[in-house]
Length: 323
Ligand SMILES: Nc1ncnc2c1ncn2[C@@H]1O[C@H](COP(=O)(O)OP(=O)(O)OP(=O)(O)O)[C@@H](O)[C@H]1O
Ligand SMILES: [Mg+2]
Image 1 (tube, rainbow, N blue to C red):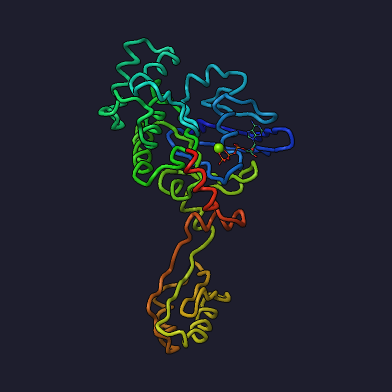
Image 2 (cartoon, protein in one colour; image 1 turned 120 degrees about the horizontal axis):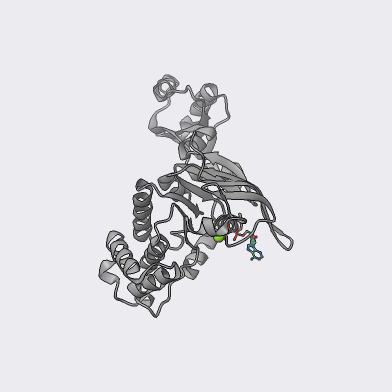
């Protein structure tokens, strides 16, 4: 097995009474996209800041490509890029000027910074807007600019803290494309997100964190499989509910839920076949309007792991305003 390029072992971090991380473990293989998925306050930013050498853990260790993030912080900084939760763009400068400034901060020569900035502006579709002030950019353009800034030195490991929070679907899609491009070039990406869909779309590996520790981990498929499928039935006629419920109870070994008078849903055993369910329901005289064997969404996985939804809709809306 290849050595993981990002490793965290038992990370703890307290802020006064708040225990932000309580023994966080992580291992990301080189070239992977890993999503750290968790609700507000789960400890995502704290974990990223420690891995990116911006904060020290109270206990535990972390290494990037074998280098300790505390003892060898300089070595680590040379390997990583970070695009933070709040875009660090100077609004008075143009996109191109922002990138030149970041280039100088990263000790690139003037010529090298310019070449690299032009190349990345082109590649991530910002070339046309490069000479407009960043203050006039849309949210999605700013995030892309921030992403480009974090790529000036071609990092081995890129940290993206909530790269798409508050973006509209189109801008979100653009960031997703950018992340995929990077990953296909071999960059290891560790991103944090509150969006289950984002983790599902982008990540090879999802680490679900809550209250500063890992509560679930796997590929999106593994996480869904652990929860099992469900069988959903929509009846032609509400009168058939008791009969249909009895059939499903027999086939699944569980008491089906009835979200309304025409719908039934039950956890499906792995060996349940849709064709058998259709036949049994038919034999019991139940007319079916629709029937499906449905794998759970990552939303349901999160709900199952934490006992609450991943994002409260109100919090999401409020944050969209702030971003
Ligand atoms: N500098 C700090 N001082 C005090 N408390 C902090 C500090 N940074 C983080 N915390 C607290 O630590 C906990 C974890 O915060 P963190 O920012 O890591 O969460 P997060 O998962 O990134 O949340 P969000 O989704 O809102 O960005 C929270 O309770 C937060 O209030
Ligand atoms: Mg955060």
